[in-house]
Length: 201
Ligand SMILES: Nc1ncnc2c1ncn2[C@@H]1O[C@H](COP(=O)(O)OP(=O)(O)OP(=O)(O)O)[C@@H](O)[C@H]1O
Ligand SMILES: O=C(O)c1ccc[n+]([C@@H]2O[C@H](COP(=O)([O-])O)[C@@H](O)[C@H]2O)c1
Image (cartoon, rainbow, N blue to C red; front, side):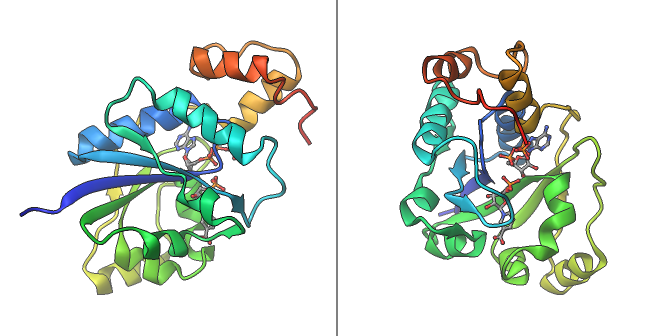
């Protein structure tokens, strides 16, 4: 039997925005994936403290993916807790699927700083989307490593968009509209729970 094809989109999701959902859906269609799992990080070790709690980030992901039959939220990193390393997540996932790690070009630029990135590259196929301000080129070390593994980096057909969680947090802190950036129900949840009101550092 053919292995299930599963996309993995890890992130801080602080908060989840429309580019995350578009990216997951683009990957699903372009790569003919059976599903895409959105995996919120517990404590992304390369970042400062997140603005919203894990429980709120998880709740917003459930709201944002509710109308998307093939997008699922996987809470394993939050359940594991502690600093989040993708390699731990990949080692924990069941072996019954062919995995694609979906990421923006900003994280591709950063990829060789990830813990055990060589092993990550051997466990998943990297599927990258363009992002304004980032170059969609892999570092030489990564190119050489992928060649050795006989793996290819996939470029997703993703229309570049300036949407980012930073922009969302800035707009919310200034009391500005988030129209076109957030799912309406996520925006409502944020309002109801008084999230992201502090000025962004
Ligand atoms: N507009 C976008 N275009 C392409 N990829 C994106 C975009 N927004 C997020 N991503 C990708 O989604 C993944 C999770 O992103 P993350 O949750 O950190 O959101 P973010 O918008 O980058 O957040 P922040 O602004 O706080 O850095 C990363 O791989 C990131 O590159
Ligand atoms: O494993 C690592 O060392 C590592 C370093 C940086 C980022 N990541 C993962 O990359 C994803 C996107 O991270 P971020 O900071 O852009 O939200 C998220 O799943 C992080 O856990 C993973």
